[in-house]
Every structure is written in structure tokens, then in C-alpha cells.
Amino acid sequence: MSKSYPRLAPDEAADLIENEQTVAFSGFTPAGAPKEVPKAIAARARRLHAAGKPFRIGVITGASTGKSLDGSLAQAEAVLFRTPYQNDPDLRKSINEGRTRFYDMHLSMLPQAVRYGFLGPVHCAVIEACDVTVSGEITLTSSVGAAPTFCHTADKIIVELNRFHPDALRGFHDIHEPEDPPYRNPLPIFRPSDRIGAPTIKVSPKKIVGIVETEALDEVSAFRQVGETTSRIGQNVADFLVAELQRGRIPKSFLPIQSGVGDTANAVLKAMGDCAGIPTFEMYTEVIQDAVVALMRQGKVRFVSGCSLTVTSPVLRDIYDNVDFFRSKLLLRPQEISNSPEVIRRLGIISINTAIEVDIGGNVNSTHVLGRNMMNGIGGSGDFARNAFLSIFTCPSTAKDGKVSTIVPLVSHLDNSEHSVQVIITEQGVADLRGKSPAERARAIIENCAHPEYRPILRDYVAMAGGGHTPQTLSAAFGMHLVFANKGDMRSVDWAKFR
Image (cartoon, rainbow, N blue to C red; front, top):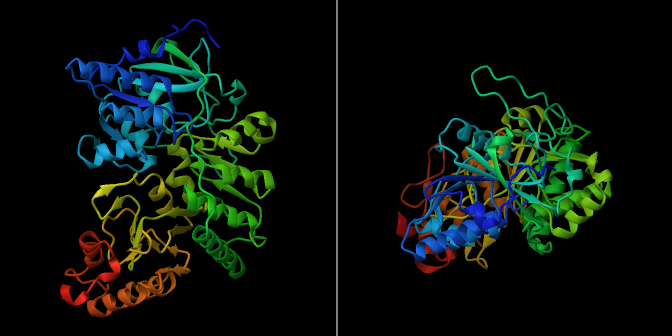
């Protein structure tokens, strides 16, 4: 590691950033996100606000981050705009109250949008690294995200050199940026383990204006233990995939898996790992979480290509203590490669993501509550669902102690349309929507996926909708949502009032 770059205290680094500038931070989930510099920027914002001076910055990242970044900046009222994805409660509140502009984006599209200037100039990139050389080679830590694009487009770079992550990580990353159109070359990835890039990001050393040293851990929270509902969802997914194998609709060698992040995703992966009928498989995904590492240890997952190691600290320490074991089994890529439609379609990915709500036509809402308040963002679900060999969405059939049905007549916000959604799975069962008309899809979703308490309500809605190609009626499509907003329980809907 070079000693030629200026060593900066976090507050000295923060002083290099001015009001209304755009700052791009490394990281994809809390993995690989800077910690000390964002906290110092938040402290600078508070000082300036106390002095009656404005200070807010545009924030671009790969995906969500941790409390030290999104959380501290939001609490300091320092976020002018934010893209492409977030999951911090303080930032979410600021977005939904209109104090922070939020641009929800497909994660595969972000780097190109940055390179083409759709989001304006990037004044500074703050990049977490485990090593940086005098020649400008940056070795990233536990994620890649959009860091290569941020480094190449930013006016200047601040490196947060994190000593917790060993420089033995060199070689775990496959850094490649595709050409911009027209006449792009193909991405020559034919199996998850194929490498097409370099182990480091290479920049002009003149762009690196300083290094902030730290040993801060990634701020990845542990997921909850698998509960009864998520366990049943996971088992339903595993049983469905085994049935597809037995019917010959999935190759005997199986196909690469993409899995979303969260409690349900962990339960699905655990069920797949425990299922003897599912052979050893590979993954081509975004987020590598604890369950994936456990499957690698079991020998159930042969290789995983992802964008981030979003694992808890004990699991990350285990990986770092056994670098040689994992070096041949996992690879971290930029998000426009991990989420590339071209590669997803070529590999024949089985995509498994979560939904907030699903309607009887098979449309999925992944982002908004009651069509109004943003939760996190679409993330990469659309990148995979639109291009997968098999696109699966999972969710519990109810929420809020049964007062909300996640199966509704019409989603209150559309993220993934019926044209991209092939299979819906809840703890109640499986609705295979392939080769079905809208009326057939409605019956399959209601009878197989809706909670028994809500099936009569949804059947009555379809009957009221009458004829037409799609069983919908404009006067009542959001009736269940309206009743919940007014009375707090979708079960009290009276369709006669919406005729």
C-alpha cells in the first residue's frame, strides 16, 4: 500500500465536499460501504446548519448502505437526493415526507446512467478499499456495486482504507465495465465462475486526494430465525422446483439461482439446501448472505457469483480466516454485470424474489405501501424477473396480523408486471401462471396463494367484475386498500358499496 497519498482525518475528508455536490459512495447493502467519512459529512452538515448555513448533498450508491452512511446523513438532514435503493428508516421517513428526492432505479441501469450524466456530475467518490497502490490500483472490500464507474466518473476520490478487510481479498473481484452503446461487445460469461475483468479498479493516482484509515466492521444485521410462515414458503419453493425437475422442465443438472435478500430469502435457501431432490447448484446473484455461505460449507452450492458479501460479522470473519477455501468458490462483480439482462438470459437463471403485494392478474408491487409510501426500492428484482428462465415471487399471504391480504384485486403500485412474473408462492401454496389467461391466473392465485379468510372476498370481487378479458372493475379495484386505510382491516370490505 502506498504512503504517497495524503492521510486525512475523517473531518478533513468531509471538508473537501461542498453544499449541493453529488457524492458517490461504494457499497452494495452495508457491505463495502464507507463508514467514517459519511459520519464526518453528517457532522459537518450539523455544524453548518447550526450556523444557519445550508448543506445537503446528492447521494448515489450501489444499493442500500448502513447506519453510518444513509442513517447518519438522513438524521443530519444532509441528503438532497438519493438513488437507486435504500432501506434506512430515517432516510425512508425523509423520502416519504418529501424532504429528500428519491429516484428508484433498476440496479443494472445505474452505472450507465452515471456514465452518461443522467444524474449530473459526480464531484467526489468515497470508496472503501482494503488496499491501494502508488499506481492507482484499488482493491475493494466486501462488495463491488457501482464503485468502478464511480471511480472513473468522479472528479476526485477519497479512499476509506479499512484494515478489517485483508489485502488477501485481491483476486476475489472481477472488475469489468462494458462499453457504452452503440456496438457494445458481448459479455463472455457462460457459467457463473467465468472471469472477464481485472482484480482491481485502476485510476489515475492524481484523482486520489486522500486516504482515511479505519477498522470499522460492515453494518450487516442478522436476519431473524426461520419462522413457521417463512419455513412453509421455503418448503413450497423447494417442492415446486423438485416437481419441475421431475417433469423435465428444469435440466437435471439444475440451473443457476438468484435469490433476493431478507428473512424469506434465507428461508428459501435453507429449504433448498435441506432438500435432497435439489442437486448441487451454482448461484448467479446480487447478494451473498449467510445462508449462501452455509450452503457452500455444506457442499450444496458449488460456486456463487455476486455483487456483495452481505453477511454478518462472524460469517465474514470465517470467510477471511479461510480465504483459500472460498477463493475458488465465490466471485464479486459490478452490479451491471451481476444484474446484466444479457447474462441472466444466457445462463437461464431461476430468479426468486419477494413481493409486498401481488394482484390476481400476477402483477407485483415490490416497493410501496398503499401505493404511496416508499419502502426500499425495486432493487434488482426487475433485472432478474424480466430475463429469467423461471421467475418466482414469494410473500406471506397476510400481513399486520391478518388485517392485510398481500393478494389483492389490483396492486397499489406496479413494479414487476404480469408479463415478467411466472410463479407466485406463499405459505398457502403455489400458483404457476405460465400458459394461463387472466381469468385462469386469478383463479390459481386466489385458490392456491391467498389466505383462506380472503378467498371468499377475492372470489366475490372476480364475480362482481363480470366479463372482459381481465377480471377487473375500476370502481372496486382498490376497495380492499381503501377499507384498510379507513378501518384498519381489509376483511371488512363490502363490495356492494363499490358497485
